[in-house]
Length: 270
Image 1 (cartoon, rainbow, N blue to C red):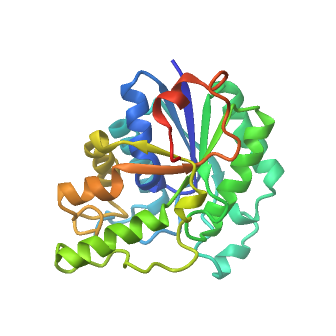
Image 2: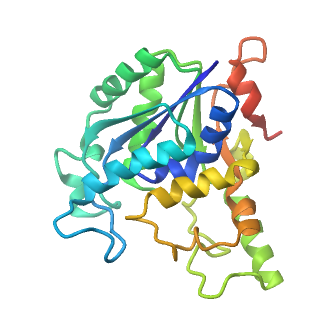
């Protein structure tokens, strides 16, 4: 049995970025642990979803456990930092936010969990955090360093395949299948959104686990209501858009020494 530790910035990031990979790993008999840097204190709740007096970070913490249950994860941990908000906002300067955390100190916090779990794979984000969110960039920096401190065999950077997304959105537009009222990504995303396919090294085919992925997303009901553009997608379109997850592995191990869980799940792009 192998182990994957999946490190994320906020509750619901694990659902969107890696839930298919993690559910597939659990189904194959591997152990999955999810670690969150923050409790998503600055998220915008779906109108009317919180009960009177209910605090958003408390609700979002509980949703993490529901998501983990949908995935089959064995353990959930929080590093204890505070959501930094979007890039350029005053909240970025709060001394207690994750963006301001010293990388070495935060990496040591994560390394405590890594040393306990001795994972074969640590998942983090790419160097731009997928789309430039400061907490996502910090996950890359902190996770990369923690992987070094704990000598994790494989550090896999979850990323958005920009070319894949553009092809898919153009295909939908040309076929006229874009759902009515669609407010999701366009066929021409911002230039800092995702990575070109030439930089992506591996993919995980998880189309058979989209039910678990959608259930993981639904668990985060404070952030994604039934009308959210991702959850509102028809099943075939959801499977097409979210059934493959992409990664950058900067230093992939040779087949002779690669962990079994890595060989089993992570397919080379080329």
